[in-house]
Length: 326
Image (tube, rainbow, N blue to C red; front, side, top):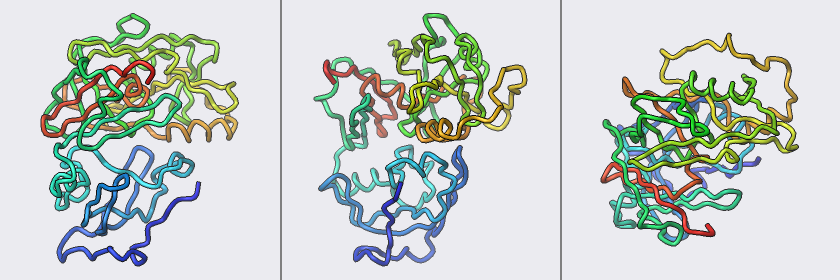
């Protein structure tokens, strides 16, 4: 997919970086490394939310973004995690600048992830036309505030059966397509479905006739269910299916072997691999997790089930039921 390329010299509002400021960056995603330089220019969100002097990164080497970026329609990434994770701590993030320039009044952003239809991100608040505000359930995120990591109940259920116990937390991530869980737990779930591990895309292939159970998390005392039908992924032909739950790597110390699990190591049709890479990208998720916590990384397949509100000032993540017909 052709990308829209930003050329600083073609912009009349582009500015040089202040003397002594950080000029370059390097990030290592699950799919590989990305690097580039910083610049300053005017940024417009939507049609009228304008930031006059925004520092942002120009990616010069994008191969580390993997197959997802090469085939997807988006041109870049807008980070919405906490400022502490910024590659340039000396410069305000987009949302920080929107606040500083009084374009928005509160450090809140919200997501509606559409099921086979356009979604929406609201910056500076929430869209009450999409949600039942009376059902809003807010959970404090775990300190230190780096990721949108919220404590869950002591149980995770799959088809009504408890598959994981102990202290749990969920990282709510709009930049993740799937749901990632602890290796041992996900392997048990996949084995229940007769899954076969496909290392080419780090997913479990399952029979398209297999009924996948519902997956249930509990945040703030309320259950949140991801229907099994939303946990099945198909290639474009509809003949090859995969479980939409993958294995998460909790730092470098978790290196459990897959030797005891049946894998699909033989050559796989290139078209199938490309279809799945386009949907989810490639590479395991590696995120540092507090000691003693069993964490899940829950992406769009979870977020599409409800309206999601991220409150930076209060350090809370909130969920609300969607209105009927949404």
